Image 1 (cartoon, helix red, strand yellow):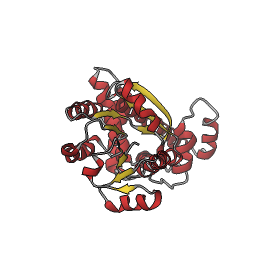
Image 2: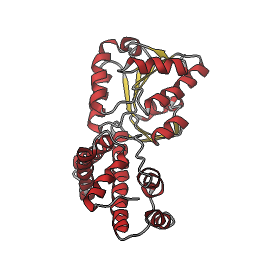
Image 3: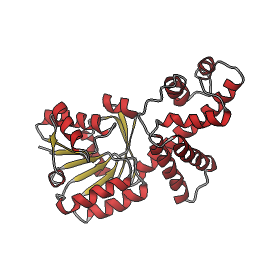
Length: 294
């Protein structure tokens, strides 16, 4: 019987922990949860039958998942858990973290007899709720395979390399999201100033070679409608873009477009607000062009 624990009941973590709880209940094992805001743990327990636990209790689980804003928060939690960690625990970090932090954290936890895998996810809150997230796993193959059956929130789980590789792939994936979103925004703002119907232009683009997830889904559903529902914060995307630049610089690579995109999203987070939805970055393009994209 496996005791599963989950730390970080945010927009992604809350439904992810729910899928783990359902799996644990089917297998007869307990599912523990912890959040910095105790009310979220209580709400999760009431809704999904999990057990709100203290950090020392969480540290005695067999399998621990974390899903926090950045690697810094993971390290804060790690410092509190370390004196209580059970040898043999496997820690799966679903945070969109930094590859350097993953390697450092794995080394520190190995001294306590604890395994650490970086396992960031992609698919947004919709994927978290549906249990169809894509998981990018970094770490030794044997440990990855041991964890794979427990990834109840995943539709796809891919072992992408050694420790830190999961975080690296996630960062590059997200900077590519940012590139596509920003480029589409610039083009559509120009078309709007040219008195072109933006929705009609998107219909053409999405049947042509310029299409992307940004043009097919994000911009029509969030920007053109002026809704900008906050499911993924602009500040977090800016952070991920910065990590992507670190990944490039760490191998002595050259990626001027990615670096420029990271700078643009950092500026957008400052100008528009880090807590806004990531698609709200296009409001900065609108300001630059004195033209709404609608």
